[in-house]
Amino acid sequence: MPKGIFTDMDELLASCEAIHYDVHLERIKAWKEEDGSRRAVGYLPVYIPRELLLACGVRPVGLRGGGDQINTIRGDSYYQSYICHLPRSVVELGLTSWKEALDGVIFPAICDVIRNLSGIWQTLFSDQFTFFLDLPQEFTPECGGRFYRQQLEELAVRLCELSGKSFDENLCLEAIGKYNDNGRVIRELADLRTENPAWIPTSEFYLVVRAGDLLEVEEHTALVQEYTRLARERANPMEDKARILIAGAFCEQPPLNMIKTIEQAGCYVVEEDLTVGHRWLKDDVAVDGDPLDALVSAYLEESVYSSVRYEGSEPKSEQLIRSVKEKGASGVLLMSPSFCDPSLLDRPHFQRGLAEAGIPCTSLKYAENLGQFQTIREQTGTFAESIQLWGETA
Image (cartoon, rainbow, N blue to C red; front, side, top):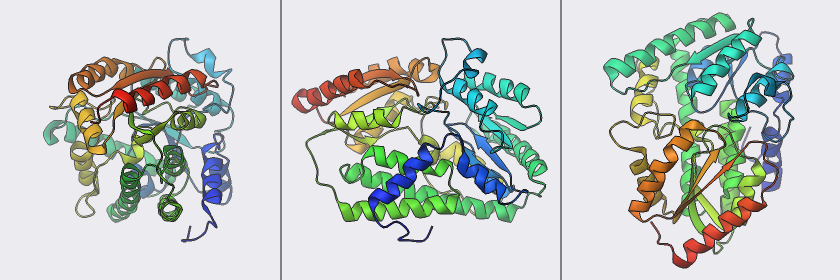
């Protein structure tokens, strides 16, 4: 995607929106039809080492479920009513439109529901590649690091069996370099949003970053750079809105119109964890030496806090408070998918920590297929107004 491929911002955003709504993975199907030897493996949020997939000759494909674009019928039959919606739509799409697009799926350790989903997937699609990536919850190199390296070695072997290619350390280092470039331009865009949230509406930021789920990494890097350029040229004027941070929406994603509703209710979202997997690492991964060791060290030392990551020596509430202060947010919206255990279990800890720090917060729940936003608009609008009238800036 060479610089200047889009004539204006509207064209770029329309392209990103088309990718966002491609829940049936038509783009990936077309890519595979061009060459019968190509392989594509999907992965669920929050984080997997995409560099390793690329090095093993497999295209990584980010899966976010069906959102509000499909009706789940067969997917509902595999799960009880009191769990989140994401696994239902994943099963629904797996049984229908993903068969021609994917050669397998990686399920990272997010929660018990996703662990269970990996087993259901393996049962339904026994002829496909299925891998449960058990991420470390202990962060010393001798224990968690050794465990994670074993996971990466096993994953590399399985991926190479699928692609028919051999693992090459130099190719892996090259892939790490490509994702370093990608992570760097996304971090730069996130920093620009913090400085000038009017220039980078989060509904646009979300579309641009999430396009990386389906685009090849170099193409996505060019897209982010192009959006950044166009956003600087556009330079939207600042409005009288409250600067807020969103936490807790890291796995099942809200409908795009819900994000727009929050902004329209008077909020500038200066930080969020909606697409945290694309910003999981705070710095570049080393591009010399053993690439697997580099990926392990990056995860142990540079990964961001999340409800699906062990908090270590510093409570996640303190990390959230620090992020609020660094981003200059005036309040926090704790936004969780319904029945999301990791997010909802962390909520009272976040609420207590924010209250002690004097940071205003409010909370809400949603589902990926939510269709009515009036209540959310009223709640977030009231929250934004209360911050501007009486709240203290963190």
